[in-house]
Length: 287
Image (cartoon, rainbow, N blue to C red; front, side, top):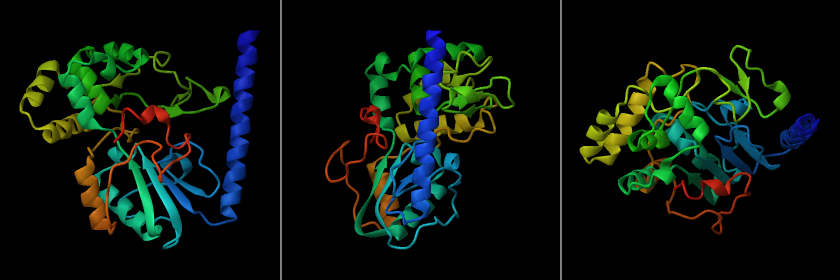
């Protein structure tokens, strides 16, 4: 009985959130956007924010013109998304945001700090690199060892070997659908599913590429092996594909017409974002 009541409460909360999201979308359709959240996924954004993502019905590519008026935005935000797209797509994204921003306004970007992951590997910090055990327990399905080398690779980029659709609504979950509709945590309940390093990357191969001492080349190797893995689900396209650091952000920003690029911390004035948009959990992982 208690589990049934919990399920009902969870479903009602999701329905309430969906109604609020539709109300926000209606208000946005009746007024102009003053901010943009690029790569927002299924996260809800405040009224006045344009949410751009495949999950919200907008596919971002290297030629698309964003439905935003010139010089119309007070703020633009992009978190944990640039690493999931190719550089040509990112170049177009920077150009379009520069076009839409008002003079003197800010495009705030958060990306994974891959150099932090590499440093933690060199320090032997297994606890930092270890993902949720529900992920690592799926690795055995493809014979992937849970050693430091593969923990590092998994922090950089992972395969998803079977198709699936994520939902936030418990009543919509259907593991028998094609593809299965799942709600987190689902990894161990989805028979045969694996989210982890590409099996083609052996411990010796990872050590050999690390030993060459060029971090950028190592990251590019991991991205290539992940993309080319025969176990990668072809319908899933949001694995990590590119690295970013401050120098690269500066180069892309300058090319797009931004005046300067400088680092800032989570919640740091004057670029604060609501916690729902910039989750505090990203603080130790992002750049």
